[in-house]
Image 1 (cartoon, rainbow, N blue to C red):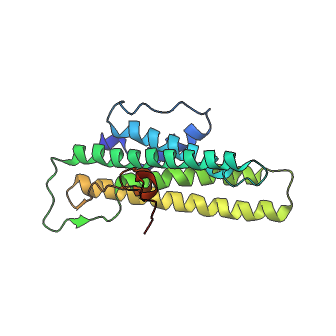
Image 2: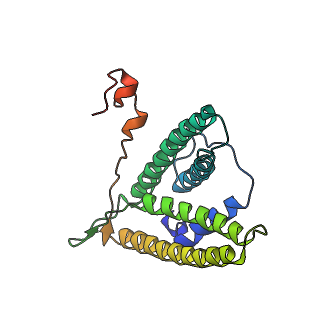
Amino acid sequence: MLKELDGSSITRFHSFALSSSESSDPEDAGPTDAWFWIKANHHYNRRLWHEEDKARRTDVDPAEIAASKRLIDKYNQKRNDAIEAIDKAILTELSAVPHAADARLNSETAGAMIDRLSILSLKIFHMRLQTERDDVDADHIETCRAKLQRLFIQRRDLASCLDDLLAEAAAGRAYFKLYRQFKMYNDPALNPYLHGSGRGA
């Protein structure tokens, strides 16, 4: 599986998915391979992007903003769940690889890096749209073109770093751990405004 998992394949998928129509929400009980969860992560990042834009409107009823905020919480939880599932799937594949005595611990997981690649692809997609607008001045277009080129560099660098981590992990020279996000605000047992105490701190 890891041989099929690399920065170039992931960024190509991200870009292709953004050029296609919106898909339905992935089924949580679906396959447990890394690619299933990479697709789920990208799907929810895409949903998050649109709701974040909608939540910043000032020309609608506050109830619509509240609805967007609730969807943002929902999609963000799904996004983070997918990150953890990506890491779990990759670490399962790597479980038989012994760590070298001097293997380094990578502070960022592969799943977190893949999530960042997804977000960068969204920034690239939407920044490119800005360069194609015909209702703005030339300065706006040029500013966005410069930002677009910087985003391409950032994505290329991050994809290369992901490849390095996966290669080193497969060789036992590096490793990462499965970290849990513990999003307390979404948990009725942990958010005081949801479990009834009504006191934050």
